[in-house]
Image (cartoon, rainbow over all chains, first blue to last red; front, side):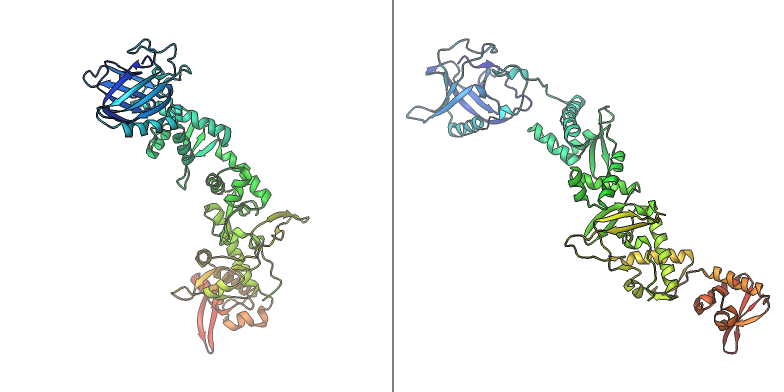
Length: 304
Length: 204
C-alpha cells in the first residue's frame, strides 16, 4: 500500500482513460483499510482511486509498478476481487497515504460489480504497455528517472509547440533521408505516427505548415501547379535540382517519372513534380502516348 | 511519292507528336510543324488536301518512330541526329499527331496566310507554300521586268506558257494563282477578267 501517491486525479496530456468503476474498496494485502468506497479509474498509464465521499482524497499507482494481476471470483457475501502484485516503491517516491507497508500486493474489491470487465481491460493495458510509447509529465516519473516534461498545450502556445515537435520530426527526416523535400502526405504520416495520440488532422497540418515561414522556421510549404503540397528545407533549391534532373534525363535519352524516381531514389510523386517543374522551366519536353508519359531534353529550344 | 524528301530531325523526335504544354516550347514545335507541312506539300506538289488525307498521310504519322532509348548524336558534319539503339524486345510504335493537334497546326498555317479552308465544315483546305501575296509579287515582278504591263494573259499562259518556263510560278495550281492575282487586284496592280475560254488577267 506504500506504492500509492497522492494525485489530483486529472489526466495528463497523452494519458487516456480506459475504464472506471464505482464502489471499489482497497485492501493492503489482506487487511481492510479506511479506503472502503471509491471510484477506481484505469488509464493508459495509471490506476487511480478516488474516494466517493471525499473527492479530494485521490491516489494512484503507475501501471509500470505492477508485476502481475490475479482474479478472485466472488463468493457468498464476498465481492469479486483483483489482486495486484507490485514492484517495490522507488526511493524518491512522492508522498502518498502510507509511508511503509509489509505487503507487496493490494486487493481491489468490486462491491458494485464490474470486476470482470475491469480485469480484462487492466490485462490489456498490461500487455500493450502503452505508457512506454507515450511520454507524460515529470510528475508521473517511473523508476527510470525523470522524463522530458511537457505541459498541456493550449492556444497559440499550443500551436507553436506542435509546430516545434513537427519541425524536429520532419527536420530530421527531410535533411537526413529525403533530399531536402517531402510531400505533405509523407509528413502527415510521420508526424502522426510519432505522436500516437492526439493526432493532427489534415487541416491542422496544412494550417500549421502555412505558418512555417512566419514563425521563422527553416522549413517552408510549397504548392506545385498540380496542387501537390510539399515541405522543403529553406535551403533546398528545387530549381537547382531541376538542372541535375535535366542532366539525368539527357544521359538516359528519356525517362518516365517512375524510371527517374528509381534512378534518383525519390518518391514517384515528387519525381513527377520535379520533371514537371523542369518542363515548365523549358528544360524538358514531353512525349505523351499509349506507352505513357515520357520526358525528353527540350531539343525544340536547344536546336535551331 | 518523292523518295528524296528529307524529313527534319523533329520528325524522329517523339515529343514532336505531343502538343507541348509549355507555351514557348509549343511555339517552336508549331513553327516546325508549319515548316514541315509546307515543304512536304511543295515537294509533292500538293496544293490541296482533306483533313482525312492529312490524318492518314506520313506527314502526321511516323510509322517508324521509336520511343525509348533514344540518344542524341553530334555528327562530324555538326548536324544533330536523334538516333536510337534497338530497344530489346520492344515493338516499334508509331508517332501519330492526334487530330486535335493537326487542327491546331492547320489553324497556325491559316493565320500565317498559307492555308485557306475550302468549305464551311473545314474538311478540306488549300495549302500554299508561298502566300498569295508573295506569289503576286513574283508574278508582277516578271511582268514588269519583261515590260508587259498593260498586257492581258490567260491564266493558262501565266502558269504554263513558254515564256514563264524559268519562273518559279510556272506550274502553279489555279486556285493559288487566282488568289495571287486577287492580292494584286487589291493593290490595283491587276484586274481579273473573263476571256473567251475562261479567265484572264490584265496587269497595270
